[in-house]
Image (tube, one colour):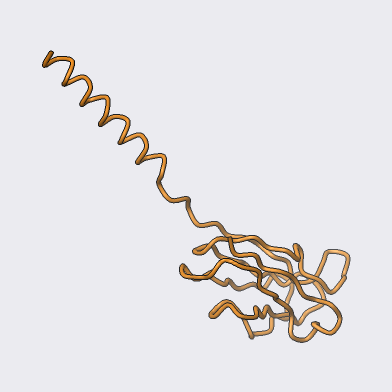
Length: 122
């Protein structure tokens, strides 16, 4: 009877440990966004971005600068600095406490030309 009880305790501990290991948080991701399409169009590629709190967006100047990345309603994510040279980049961290939702983003100099997109925080 004692052997059965010990076996059940060991089994229960093994199950708890395996569940705990499987519930470990996912690593933060970095999403790369081109500012200016390869074909020269004034657009972000991709123009819809899905992220989670803790993720990072890498904004890369691709074509026809200057470009920047402004995000409405999500503090600390906008990058007002203009990038002029192809390949220049900067990163925006999505705050750990960012509320789930959809946020508009745009390039200030080219917003009127339609250079804008959608940032979805899951």
